[in-house]
Length: 144
Image (cartoon, rainbow, N blue to C red; front, side):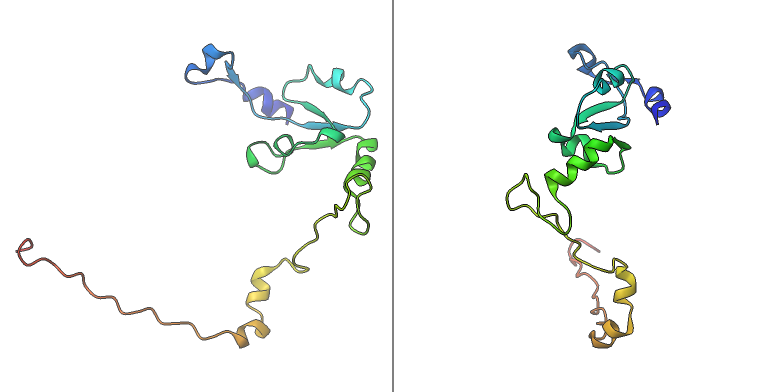
């Protein structure tokens, strides 16, 4: 992943080069920590690697550009702190008053299997026939 980041460094097209935004580079791994025991200084010289405290998590850091799937490295203490901040599926969040983790709306996520099951298909209405289409009326004065 780090080699992909290094290979992606390109000159920015347009006037951004003159406005101190000369290069563009893809995002690399994100390191999430609880206590900064030199992690921030160790990672700041590696291109593409970002560090963030577990208290300052940001959706744009976790999924830049709205794209899921960023490689994220959690420290052990940060992972334990997540359950303190956001709670667990069974209990509420101690640090956020009245916050509960969202639950899955569906137990079985295989939607195609549910729709095509005999139980669902037996109660559905029959498929409607497509309405008859007519030719568009042509103007007799223009179309000779």
